[in-house]
Length: 196
Image 1: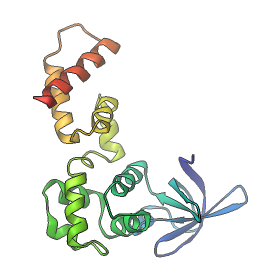
Image 2 (image 1 turned 120 degrees about the horizontal axis):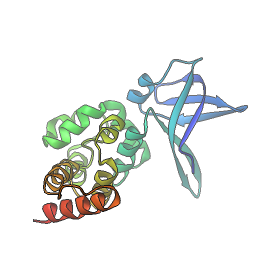
Image 3 (image 1 turned 45 degrees about the vertical axis):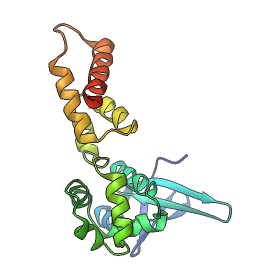
Image 4 (image 1 turned 90 degrees about the vertical axis):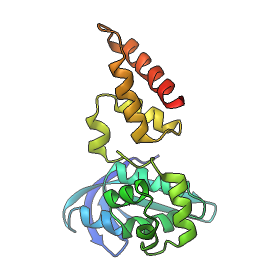
């Protein structure tokens, strides 16, 4: 529904941000890490958004970039983590540190995040290991086959392993193949590599 809102940042709280655009002032729940990454009050900024809507409430959540929003959405898939919990977790740990803790299965680091207990940290490890690697916009867009990587990750494959499988598939491609046929063969080759 909403991808992002651009406007003047009118106020920053501990976990909220007010942004005025077109005569409307929006109040968004924003993780503390993202708040510090956004421009100061009085400046123009762009906030990536996600709308939470239930029968009795609506709440707009904001993030400094689309990668952080993707992390938030992945956290929501973990049993026991709702939107407020996800904001609290993301406010207590930076993106790179979260990805590293998940990849290295650093349960102690995850448990140190405010609002995250041992059981939920274990569930996060099981549900998210490999899913947040390369999730920053710079990393996702820097590879020549970012769309294929996203498609493989969407199918449930570990991003790091999917990236390696794409490299192997590329090395095995016949010379002179290009365009759409190249992408099809890369995708097929990566799935074969990941399935073996």
